[in-house]
Length: 232
Image 1: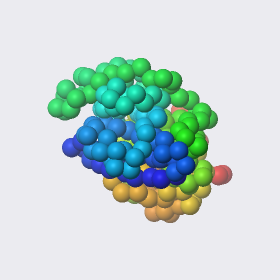
Image 2 (image 1 turned 90 degrees about the vertical axis):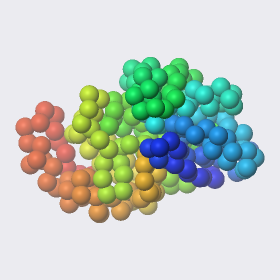
Image 3 (image 1 turned 120 degrees about the vertical axis):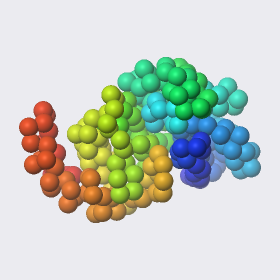
């Protein structure tokens, strides 16, 4: 699988372009804006956009999906249906930050365990709430690459201090959904540089193994909390 990544919008959100080498069919993950840059790369590499994937409903990730679909004929898949209220409010989100953002109805909402295909390539869908309720991540087992949106970053984690966020849920998503994919898996976060799950297990001060050992005490009394080390 071919892979490229470019920051888009003034929020420098990572938009990923994936391509099947045999068919030249492509997928774009999180086209938040700057669509001309995305289209230029597709044209330069002679790629045909088959599917647009969205990790969650914030405007810097989802705001350009509808326009890109209209311009290319590609279908939109995702995120999880629990993001529908955010997708519906994309124009209002964009207006607050001076960005053009359009609402859309996806070809299909995605759920945990679904598969997304373009050309000969396949991505696994993981429902990873915590930053938002319907946040999803995409995983290529063949390429050992994950695209995690705003769930996890190098040496930090996604924001949870808003109406759709929840810290305990976010930590569970990272340690129980993402880390078990394997220490060797590299991931593209929503912003900033790539990392690997192995590196974050070792060095992330919020969800690494050393931090996880302290979570039960920190979260004592939180309803339903059973955070421990990954794999325990």
